[in-house]
Image 1 (cartoon, one colour):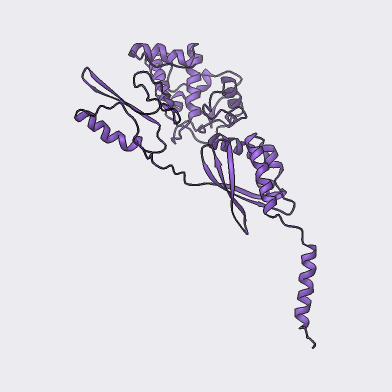
Image 2: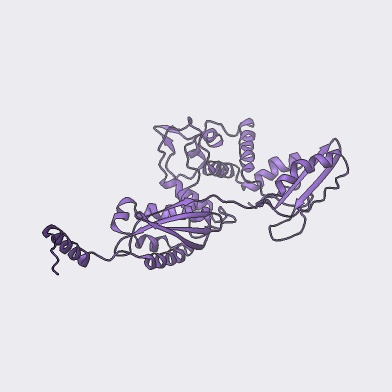
Length: 345
Protein backbone atom coordinates (compact mmCIF):
# COMPACT_ATOMS: atom_id res chain seq x y z
CA UNK A 1 0.00 0.00 0.00
CA UNK A 2 1.42 3.37 -0.98
CA UNK A 3 0.73 6.58 0.89
CA UNK A 4 0.88 9.77 -1.11
CA UNK A 5 1.84 12.87 0.84
CA UNK A 6 0.66 16.23 -0.28
CA UNK A 7 3.76 18.12 -1.41
CA UNK A 8 2.80 21.28 0.49
CA UNK A 9 2.13 19.29 3.65
CA UNK A 10 5.45 17.50 3.27
CA UNK A 11 7.35 20.79 3.00
CA UNK A 12 5.62 22.20 6.08
CA UNK A 13 6.44 19.04 8.03
CA UNK A 14 10.13 19.24 7.11
CA UNK A 15 10.19 22.95 8.03
CA UNK A 16 8.57 22.23 11.40
CA UNK A 17 11.01 19.44 12.27
CA UNK A 18 13.94 21.62 11.23
CA UNK A 19 12.63 24.49 13.37
CA UNK A 20 12.13 22.29 16.42
CA UNK A 21 15.65 20.94 16.10
CA UNK A 22 17.18 24.42 16.23
CA UNK A 23 14.84 26.18 18.63
CA UNK A 24 16.63 27.29 21.82
CA UNK A 25 15.58 25.35 24.93
CA UNK A 26 12.86 27.13 26.88
CA UNK A 27 12.82 27.42 30.69
CA UNK A 28 10.75 24.66 32.29
CA UNK A 29 9.10 24.18 35.68
CA UNK A 30 12.27 22.92 37.37
CA UNK A 31 14.12 26.03 36.12
CA UNK A 32 11.46 28.27 37.63
CA UNK A 33 11.47 26.40 40.94
CA UNK A 34 15.24 26.73 41.13
CA UNK A 35 14.97 30.45 40.36
CA UNK A 36 12.40 30.86 43.15
CA UNK A 37 14.72 29.18 45.69
CA UNK A 38 17.53 31.51 44.65
CA UNK A 39 15.17 34.48 44.71
CA UNK A 40 14.08 33.65 48.27
CA UNK A 41 17.68 33.36 49.47
CA UNK A 42 18.79 36.64 47.88
CA UNK A 43 15.60 38.41 48.98
CA UNK A 44 16.01 37.46 52.64
CA UNK A 45 19.72 38.33 52.54
CA UNK A 46 18.71 41.70 51.01
CA UNK A 47 20.96 41.13 48.00
CA UNK A 48 18.97 43.02 45.39
CA UNK A 49 22.03 43.24 43.13
CA UNK A 50 22.10 39.44 42.89
CA UNK A 51 18.43 39.37 41.89
CA UNK A 52 19.00 42.11 39.32
CA UNK A 53 21.96 40.14 38.00
CA UNK A 54 19.56 37.32 37.12
CA UNK A 55 17.58 39.60 34.81
CA UNK A 56 17.85 39.81 31.03
CA UNK A 57 18.94 42.75 28.89
CA UNK A 58 15.26 43.27 28.04
CA UNK A 59 14.38 43.70 31.71
CA UNK A 60 17.40 45.87 32.47
CA UNK A 61 16.49 48.18 29.60
CA UNK A 62 13.21 48.94 31.40
CA UNK A 63 14.63 49.64 34.87
CA UNK A 64 18.07 50.66 36.08
CA UNK A 65 19.97 48.79 38.76
CA UNK A 66 19.63 51.77 41.12
CA UNK A 67 15.85 52.05 40.75
CA UNK A 68 15.46 48.28 41.12
CA UNK A 69 17.54 48.31 44.30
CA UNK A 70 15.51 51.17 45.78
CA UNK A 71 12.24 49.48 44.90
CA UNK A 72 13.36 46.22 46.49
CA UNK A 73 14.46 47.97 49.68
CA UNK A 74 11.05 49.62 49.98
CA UNK A 75 9.28 46.35 49.25
CA UNK A 76 11.32 44.40 51.84
CA UNK A 77 10.63 47.07 54.45
CA UNK A 78 6.89 46.70 53.85
CA UNK A 79 6.41 42.93 53.51
CA UNK A 80 9.20 41.54 55.68
CA UNK A 81 11.09 38.31 55.09
CA UNK A 82 9.97 35.74 52.52
CA UNK A 83 8.78 32.65 54.39
CA UNK A 84 7.75 30.21 51.67
CA UNK A 85 6.37 30.01 48.13
CA UNK A 86 3.97 27.70 46.28
CA UNK A 87 3.49 27.06 42.56
CA UNK A 88 0.08 28.11 41.21
CA UNK A 89 0.11 27.70 37.43
CA UNK A 90 1.88 28.64 34.22
CA UNK A 91 0.61 30.72 31.32
CA UNK A 92 2.03 32.19 28.14
CA UNK A 93 3.07 35.23 30.18
CA UNK A 94 5.06 33.25 32.76
CA UNK A 95 4.85 31.17 35.90
CA UNK A 96 2.79 32.19 38.93
CA UNK A 97 3.64 31.56 42.57
CA UNK A 98 2.03 32.58 45.84
CA UNK A 99 4.55 33.90 48.35
CA UNK A 100 4.01 34.14 52.09
CA UNK A 101 5.89 37.09 53.59
CA UNK A 102 5.95 38.11 57.25
CA UNK A 103 3.48 40.94 56.69
CA UNK A 104 1.78 40.10 53.41
CA UNK A 105 0.67 37.42 50.94
CA UNK A 106 1.64 38.12 47.33
CA UNK A 107 1.09 36.61 43.89
CA UNK A 108 4.46 36.62 42.10
CA UNK A 109 4.58 36.28 38.31
CA UNK A 110 7.88 35.70 36.54
CA UNK A 111 8.90 34.97 32.95
CA UNK A 112 12.33 33.53 32.12
CA UNK A 113 14.06 33.40 28.74
CA UNK A 114 15.91 30.41 27.28
CA UNK A 115 19.00 31.41 29.29
CA UNK A 116 16.91 31.36 32.48
CA UNK A 117 17.18 35.13 32.84
CA UNK A 118 14.21 37.26 33.96
CA UNK A 119 12.26 38.96 31.20
CA UNK A 120 9.42 40.10 33.45
CA UNK A 121 8.47 39.82 37.12
CA UNK A 122 5.90 41.53 39.28
CA UNK A 123 4.05 41.25 42.58
CA UNK A 124 0.35 41.57 43.31
CA UNK A 125 -0.91 41.66 46.89
CA UNK A 126 -3.42 38.97 47.76
CA UNK A 127 -6.34 39.48 50.15
CA UNK A 128 -5.11 38.91 53.69
CA UNK A 129 -7.78 37.20 55.77
CA UNK A 130 -7.56 36.21 59.43
CA UNK A 131 -10.43 34.28 60.94
CA UNK A 132 -12.15 35.61 64.04
CA UNK A 133 -11.19 34.00 67.34
CA UNK A 134 -13.26 30.92 68.21
CA UNK A 135 -13.05 31.56 71.96
CA UNK A 136 -14.14 34.38 74.23
CA UNK A 137 -11.24 36.75 74.82
CA UNK A 138 -10.50 37.50 78.47
CA UNK A 139 -11.17 40.89 80.06
CA UNK A 140 -11.38 42.56 83.48
CA UNK A 141 -14.83 43.99 82.75
CA UNK A 142 -17.07 43.03 85.70
CA UNK A 143 -20.27 43.52 83.65
CA UNK A 144 -22.14 44.88 86.69
CA UNK A 145 -23.85 48.03 85.48
CA UNK A 146 -24.95 49.92 82.38
CA UNK A 147 -21.51 51.47 81.75
CA UNK A 148 -19.78 48.08 81.94
CA UNK A 149 -22.35 46.63 79.56
CA UNK A 150 -21.99 49.55 77.14
CA UNK A 151 -18.20 49.08 77.03
CA UNK A 152 -18.68 45.36 76.44
CA UNK A 153 -21.16 46.03 73.63
CA UNK A 154 -18.69 48.17 71.67
CA UNK A 155 -15.41 46.41 72.50
CA UNK A 156 -16.35 42.73 72.32
CA UNK A 157 -16.96 42.54 68.53
CA UNK A 158 -13.58 44.19 67.85
CA UNK A 159 -11.46 42.20 70.32
CA UNK A 160 -12.81 38.95 68.86
CA UNK A 161 -11.25 39.79 65.47
CA UNK A 162 -8.35 37.56 64.55
CA UNK A 163 -5.82 40.36 64.09
CA UNK A 164 -6.60 42.16 67.38
CA UNK A 165 -4.37 41.40 70.37
CA UNK A 166 -5.45 43.85 73.05
CA UNK A 167 -7.67 46.83 73.82
CA UNK A 168 -7.47 49.13 76.82
CA UNK A 169 -9.74 52.07 77.52
CA UNK A 170 -10.83 54.34 80.31
CA UNK A 171 -14.21 55.88 81.11
CA UNK A 172 -13.91 59.14 83.05
CA UNK A 173 -16.97 60.55 84.80
CA UNK A 174 -16.01 63.52 86.91
CA UNK A 175 -13.47 62.26 89.43
CA UNK A 176 -14.40 58.63 88.87
CA UNK A 177 -12.26 56.56 86.49
CA UNK A 178 -12.88 53.07 85.20
CA UNK A 179 -10.12 51.25 83.34
CA UNK A 180 -10.88 48.25 81.16
CA UNK A 181 -8.49 45.68 79.69
CA UNK A 182 -9.24 43.11 76.99
CA UNK A 183 -7.03 40.54 75.30
CA UNK A 184 -3.35 39.73 75.84
CA UNK A 185 -0.12 41.76 75.98
CA UNK A 186 1.12 39.95 72.84
CA UNK A 187 -0.40 37.52 70.37
CA UNK A 188 1.43 34.63 72.02
CA UNK A 189 1.40 35.71 75.69
CA UNK A 190 -1.86 35.08 77.56
CA UNK A 191 -1.31 37.79 80.19
CA UNK A 192 -4.08 40.38 80.44
CA UNK A 193 -2.68 43.90 79.85
CA UNK A 194 -2.66 46.35 82.75
CA UNK A 195 -4.56 49.50 81.76
CA UNK A 196 -2.65 51.53 84.38
CA UNK A 197 0.91 50.52 83.40
CA UNK A 198 0.95 49.48 79.74
CA UNK A 199 3.11 51.53 77.36
CA UNK A 200 1.98 52.45 73.85
CA UNK A 201 3.78 53.93 70.88
CA UNK A 202 1.93 57.09 69.91
CA UNK A 203 3.31 57.06 66.37
CA UNK A 204 2.19 59.98 64.25
CA UNK A 205 0.54 61.71 67.19
CA UNK A 206 4.12 62.92 67.67
CA UNK A 207 3.54 65.25 64.70
CA UNK A 208 1.00 67.15 66.79
CA UNK A 209 3.67 67.66 69.44
CA UNK A 210 6.11 68.84 66.76
CA UNK A 211 3.69 71.46 65.47
CA UNK A 212 2.82 72.47 69.04
CA UNK A 213 6.51 73.10 69.73
CA UNK A 214 6.68 75.23 66.59
CA UNK A 215 3.58 77.17 67.65
CA UNK A 216 5.13 77.86 71.04
CA UNK A 217 8.30 79.21 69.39
CA UNK A 218 6.27 81.40 67.04
CA UNK A 219 4.07 82.72 69.86
CA UNK A 220 7.21 83.57 71.82
CA UNK A 221 8.67 85.49 68.90
CA UNK A 222 11.62 83.09 68.51
CA UNK A 223 10.70 81.67 65.09
CA UNK A 224 8.36 82.64 62.25
CA UNK A 225 6.06 80.38 60.27
CA UNK A 226 7.43 81.92 57.06
CA UNK A 227 11.06 81.25 58.01
CA UNK A 228 12.86 79.21 55.33
CA UNK A 229 13.84 75.80 56.60
CA UNK A 230 17.36 76.36 55.27
CA UNK A 231 17.84 78.92 58.06
CA UNK A 232 17.87 76.05 60.57
CA UNK A 233 19.91 73.53 58.59
CA UNK A 234 23.69 73.21 58.09
CA UNK A 235 25.27 75.50 55.49
CA UNK A 236 26.43 72.41 53.59
CA UNK A 237 22.82 71.74 52.53
CA UNK A 238 21.77 73.72 49.43
CA UNK A 239 18.89 76.15 49.82
CA UNK A 240 15.63 74.19 49.58
CA UNK A 241 13.30 76.18 47.33
CA UNK A 242 10.96 75.97 44.35
CA UNK A 243 11.73 78.62 41.70
CA UNK A 244 13.01 81.05 44.29
CA UNK A 245 10.30 80.32 46.87
CA UNK A 246 11.88 78.61 49.89
CA UNK A 247 10.32 75.75 51.80
CA UNK A 248 9.01 77.26 55.03
CA UNK A 249 8.47 75.96 58.56
CA UNK A 250 4.71 76.24 58.07
CA UNK A 251 4.84 74.09 54.93
CA UNK A 252 6.65 71.37 56.87
CA UNK A 253 4.01 71.53 59.59
CA UNK A 254 0.99 71.40 57.26
CA UNK A 255 2.49 68.90 54.78
CA UNK A 256 2.65 71.21 51.76
CA UNK A 257 6.45 71.26 51.40
CA UNK A 258 6.36 68.71 48.57
CA UNK A 259 8.63 66.27 50.38
CA UNK A 260 8.15 62.54 49.70
CA UNK A 261 6.58 60.47 52.44
CA UNK A 262 9.97 58.98 53.32
CA UNK A 263 13.56 59.71 52.19
CA UNK A 264 14.97 57.25 49.67
CA UNK A 265 18.02 56.41 51.77
CA UNK A 266 15.96 55.16 54.72
CA UNK A 267 15.58 51.73 53.12
CA UNK A 268 18.90 50.02 53.83
CA UNK A 269 20.16 46.64 54.93
CA UNK A 270 19.96 47.91 58.52
CA UNK A 271 16.20 48.43 58.47
CA UNK A 272 14.47 46.76 61.44
CA UNK A 273 10.85 45.93 60.59
CA UNK A 274 9.67 46.30 64.19
CA UNK A 275 11.22 49.79 64.38
CA UNK A 276 11.90 50.92 60.79
CA UNK A 277 13.22 54.39 61.69
CA UNK A 278 15.60 53.35 64.50
CA UNK A 279 18.67 53.20 62.25
CA UNK A 280 18.03 56.55 60.55
CA UNK A 281 20.14 59.26 62.15
CA UNK A 282 20.50 63.01 61.56
CA UNK A 283 23.60 62.47 59.42
CA UNK A 284 21.56 60.25 57.09
CA UNK A 285 18.90 62.95 56.84
CA UNK A 286 21.46 65.63 56.00
CA UNK A 287 23.02 63.35 53.38
CA UNK A 288 19.61 63.00 51.73
CA UNK A 289 18.89 66.74 51.84
CA UNK A 290 22.25 67.62 50.25
CA UNK A 291 21.18 65.75 47.12
CA UNK A 292 17.45 66.50 47.24
CA UNK A 293 15.97 68.57 44.42
CA UNK A 294 12.62 70.31 44.96
CA UNK A 295 10.61 69.12 41.96
CA UNK A 296 7.16 70.66 42.45
CA UNK A 297 5.51 73.85 43.65
CA UNK A 298 5.44 74.16 47.42
CA UNK A 299 2.77 75.56 49.72
CA UNK A 300 -0.12 74.42 47.52
CA UNK A 301 -0.81 70.70 47.58
CA UNK A 302 -1.18 68.60 50.72
CA UNK A 303 1.07 65.53 50.65
CA UNK A 304 1.53 63.64 53.91
CA UNK A 305 5.22 63.36 54.76
CA UNK A 306 6.99 61.70 57.68
CA UNK A 307 10.15 63.19 56.21
CA UNK A 308 8.84 66.76 56.40
CA UNK A 309 7.81 66.34 60.04
CA UNK A 310 11.23 64.91 60.82
CA UNK A 311 12.98 67.87 59.19
CA UNK A 312 10.85 70.22 61.28
CA UNK A 313 11.80 68.32 64.42
CA UNK A 314 15.49 68.62 63.57
CA UNK A 315 15.06 72.37 62.94
CA UNK A 316 13.55 72.75 66.41
CA UNK A 317 16.40 70.76 67.93
CA UNK A 318 19.05 72.89 66.26
CA UNK A 319 17.30 76.15 67.13
CA UNK A 320 17.01 75.26 70.83
CA UNK A 321 20.19 73.18 71.14
CA UNK A 322 18.15 70.42 72.79
CA UNK A 323 17.00 66.99 71.71
CA UNK A 324 13.46 66.64 70.41
CA UNK A 325 12.61 64.38 73.33
CA UNK A 326 13.78 66.94 75.86
CA UNK A 327 11.81 69.69 74.09
CA UNK A 328 8.64 67.58 74.38
CA UNK A 329 9.24 66.91 78.07
CA UNK A 330 10.07 70.53 78.96
CA UNK A 331 7.36 72.24 76.91
CA UNK A 332 4.49 69.74 76.83
CA UNK A 333 4.76 66.88 79.33
CA UNK A 334 5.78 68.79 82.45
CA UNK A 335 3.41 71.78 81.99
CA UNK A 336 0.45 69.46 81.28
CA UNK A 337 1.28 66.92 83.97
CA UNK A 338 1.82 64.12 81.46
CA UNK A 339 4.00 62.07 83.82
CA UNK A 340 3.63 58.76 81.99
CA UNK A 341 4.82 59.95 78.59
CA UNK A 342 8.41 58.92 77.82
CA UNK A 343 10.69 59.60 74.88
CA UNK A 344 13.63 57.63 73.51
CA UNK A 345 15.48 60.64 72.09
